[in-house]
Length: 167
View (spheres, one colour):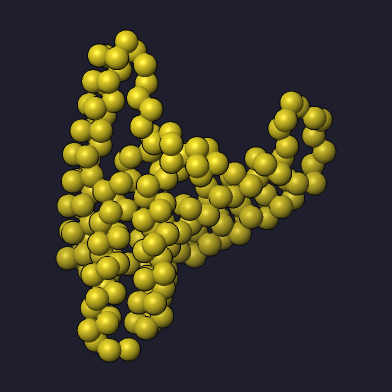
């Protein structure tokens, strides 16, 4: 793969990673959350992470990334989560309203899958101190965004007769 293409992919990946870190605190987007089936996981960062993962996969394949040693306990935990979710489907539960174990399991596994992608992506992306410093700066910048977002919501709640903003 040409070096220029790898460099472009790296910059695209960094841009998407920056957007993911920037949007991570923005979890209260009811319009986007409802479109994602009522997901409680930060919908904007899930979208940008979903765009960054294919770029990361190409870079990981070409550069032959390996998972860190710290991933082994997590992989054991992940296999236990999947096994317990599978076996939980065979437990007989009495009917309760419109609740079904399959719906609860699928929602929980979707949340776990997003967390797994976040963990694996971030544990392999950062390879040196400069990348970690860059990520910490992005996280600090997203903290400023979170504060501004919170102040905007409080402002609307206080000055719009206590109604929660629809955005």
